[in-house]
Length: 246
Image 1 (cartoon, one colour):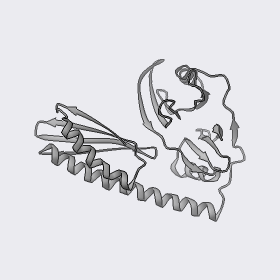
Image 2 (cartoon, one colour; image 1 turned 30 degrees about the horizontal axis):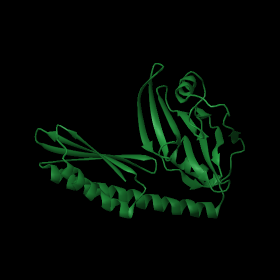
Image 3 (spheres, one colour; image 1 turned 90 degrees about the horizontal axis):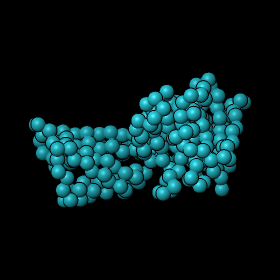
């Protein structure tokens, strides 16, 4: 588990870093899906503020606490964080049980117009592909990334300026979700977070997408033994593409 600590108008000592890391270690014992925390400590006029950003199962979380002392702010924040993660874990477990029950009771109908696409073999530059997508009527793009052997990504045009890219990082070998913000035809900024593909059948992921209103889900299809991406465009079209297979 990675812990990043940033100080604003506050000097983060080695002792403080160790103190926070020890506080966060216990979380891993009851929920180990969180790979990193970003903690920010800030000195304010009337006290101290502690914040934490993290992602769990594709969902972003942000918590903060203000107190008279930095230790009090951290302690209260960690308590709040633990409650939030337990709540998220329990909710996820209930959802999985409900999904399994629904799948066992009746198979979700696969849309008759489900379209199957293939990834173009010719590798392409990711940023060039995003810029091309910004000028087209398409909402999604799938490509082999140039100069990154074996890396296939799914790109979703969420808005004219925002593009979500899901793929496997070559260095860490972990799945990540990157948000690219365009300004004109230039990349203004990017945000990166871990992405944990869940294991579904096609029927289950269709049910998940319909329930959550998701536009793009990358998942492990247990029936096909393959990493796949399912997208749902604004006009109602479902598309399924295989990113990698056993």
